[in-house]
Length: 252
Image 1 (cartoon, one colour):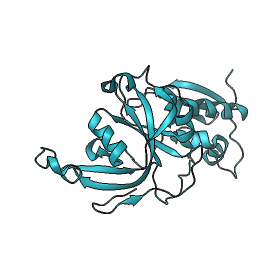
Image 2 (cartoon, helix red, strand yellow):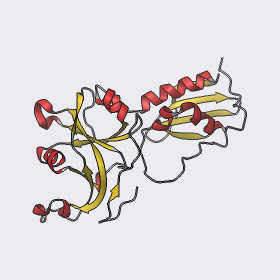
Image 3 (cartoon, one colour):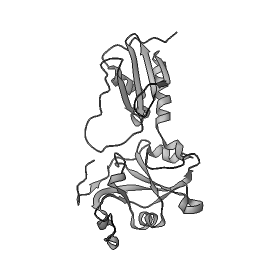
Image 4 (spheres, one colour):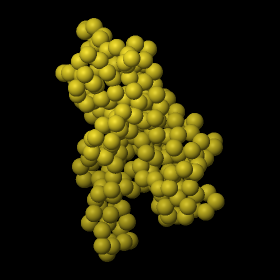
C-alpha cells in the first residue's frame, strides 16, 4: 500500500472471514484512546510504523496506565481509510510541538467494538505491533495467542511428515539474529532450511511469490499466514507442481 500526503487510501471491500487481517496496536494514554473512541482515528508515527500497516481491522492494546482495564485488548474497530499527514495536521492545537512536521499514518476508524472476552497480557513484558487474523482475535485469551508463527510451524511440520519427508524443528543454523531455523528438511540433495516469518499484508495487486528454490541447499522464508491458510498448496509451490516429490528420506 502506497500513501501520498492528502490522498487517502480506502480499506478493501472484501467480506470478512477467518483470515481477515488485523493490526494490533498500542494505546498508552487516555487522550489517544478518547480520539479512537470518540473521534474515530488512530495515529502511527511513520518512523516507528511496522513494515506494513495495511489491515482490515485495528485492535487496541491498552497498557498498564489504564489501571484495571489495562494490559489487555478490550476493543477493536474496522479501518475505513488511511491518510499520510503531519503531526501538526493531526493535532493543530499543538502546532509548536518539536515533532509538528513529522509524518504520521492516520487510520480512520469505525465504531469501537468490545471483544466478548478481553485478551490479557500475562506473558509479554512489552508489546509493539502484532499482525493477526480476525479468527485469532476472537479466539485468543492471551496476547501470545495472536502470534501466528508457532501454529504455522506445527502445521507445516505435520504436512511435511505426511509426505514422508525427513524434517526437524528448531534446527541450529547461524543466520543473523535467528540462530535456529524453524524447520530443516534432509535428503540426498542436501538440506532445505525454512524460516517462518510473522505476516504482513500488502494491499497491492502483485501476484504471490513463487517459492521454488533451485537446490536443497537454499534458505527459504515463508509467511506464517500463507502456511496456515494452505500448507499443502505452499509445499506444492515450493517443490513445483509438475515435478515429482523430492526424494528425501528419513534419517536413520
